[in-house]
Image 1: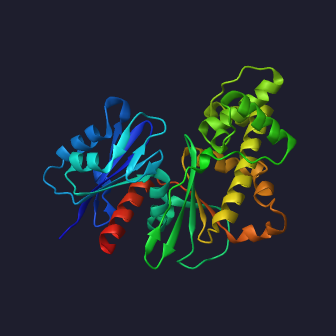
Image 2: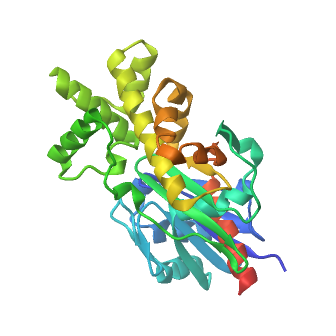
Length: 320
C-alpha cells in the first residue's frame, strides 16, 4: 500500500509543508505558510491536514531551526515549542518526529538531485559509507554530520554556531573583543550568518567612527560598487569561514564531502576566491594538505530539509 507522510521545514519566518509518498516529496504538494499569520505550528499543520482529508497519514516529521531534545524543540527566533504529541494531534499520524533543521539537511544529502549541488572545491572520491558534513549559514550557523553505519544513517544534533569564535590574528582578536563588548560572548554565528556579515562590517565602521547597522545585502551591493570597507568585511567573513570549515573537517572527517546550505552560503560563494578563505582553510600546519581530501559543495535546493525529513521517515519505517 502507498505510504503517506507529512513533512515540514519550520524556519523563523516561514514554514514549508509537503506530502511524502514512500519517502519521496511530492513537489505539487509543497505549500509555504507565513508564521506571523498563525499562532502555532499545530495550527499550520491542522490546516494543511484538513486540505488533504482524503489521505491517511502514517508518519509526520518536522525540521525546526532550533535545539531539539527528546522529541521536543524550541525555535531560536520564534516563540514556538514543538513536540511529538502536538504533531500527532495536528496530523492524525501516529508516528511523529522532531528534527533540528541541520539534521534534516544531513539526512537529505544522499537523496539530492545533482543539478542542485555545485562544487566549490574539489576533493577525493570516497566510499558510500563515508561521513558527510552539512554546514548551514543563514539566519544563524549550525552543522550536522551524517554517519552511514550498518544499522542505518546516524545524524547527531548540534548547536555549533554558539561555540566560541576561534581567532588566530590580531584583527580577529580585536573583532572578537568587539563582539564580546556587544553580546558578552563572541560566538561563531556572530561572524558567520546573515547578521554576522553585518557584524564584520560594523567592526570596520566602529574603527572608522562611522554608523553601524548595514545589512548583508547592502554590503554585497557596496562591494560590487567598489567599497573597500565592504570588501574587507566580506574578506573577514570568508577567512573565518575557511578556518572554521577546516576545524570542523578535522573534527568529523567528512570524506563524503562538506555541503554548505542556507542563504548566506549561496551569497558568499561567488566571493570566496576574493577572500582569505583558501589560506585559512589550509592553515592547519602539517595537516593542511590532509584537507585536500574533502570536497566542498553548495546545495541550492530550497526544499532539501523536506527531502531530509522524508528520507529519515522512510529509513525509520523500514528499520522498524
